[in-house]
Length: 199
Image (tube, rainbow, N blue to C red; front, side):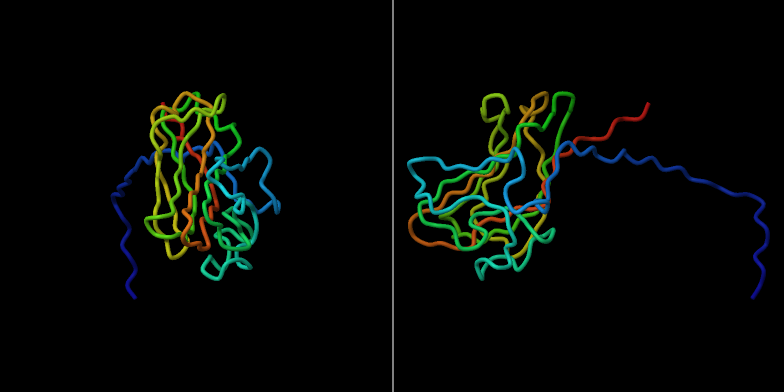
């Protein structure tokens, strides 16, 4: 072993990174076995048969084609956690109307999902609503019509129309009258905005 000679000159490199995002709203559904406070679920009558609802629970005891566990154990939210969804379903799940983007310049929705639905016939959609009157802001963020095969992370920018508003997020699920499967599961839900800029 040879001793390293003393350095006569040392160089330092400074690298600037953007500040971490600020979490405006988050939920992992693990604090209770029912929808957390402020979350709402319902159906778009008359198309829904009333056999399917959004609910919180451990998906492992549900449909055999669903996930064996929540992404963040023990619970997630989903369509009929303990069984397959029903025929002629048209239901929605809404966050509390407390997602405050009044001072934001942009915002991002990130969540974990598992989908087992009839490809091209049953579908989901995600939209942003103004909290004051539930008017949709911008176009649908996503409209999935297939399965995922496992848990996956989704990250999508909220529409520009949501900036400057207090909003809620709506997940809608629709199924026809032919085939039923495990459904749609959502977990680890967050809305973030960029961190404050440095002077």
